[in-house]
View (spheres, rainbow, N blue to C red):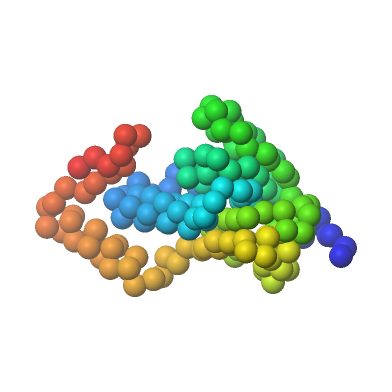
Length: 183
């Protein structure tokens, strides 16, 4: 398989996209629940080797759920890998970080027991190729947790509408802080 590096954006960072994510209560709850669900599903079963494809800052494989796991994070962006390395070091978490893309995983067949790909599939050049690679690097009984954001879903639309009603009725809106939610 020929790998065309010019098709991939390998130099990016969240700060280049936006200053910060929304700090509304619904966004906070959505992302915390989503993170928790993905980690729980991916870490089910006995400890083994986990790969986080498009790992970003590696927050998912840095989680306690993967305490006894061999953790590998893969991302095309050196800036994201730099942040992941800093996070892992400050948390005292051993994580192996690799620069690469999902469509061409530089690992042996059956190398991982679990794989996470969160909020990235829609950014891949060849989604089918990436899914084939996920299957290739997983053990026969391996588990892949692939998830994407769906901001048009019914639950998000209802949440946004309810949140908007807080302001109309003079109720306090929540905001996030480094310690959690503040009303």
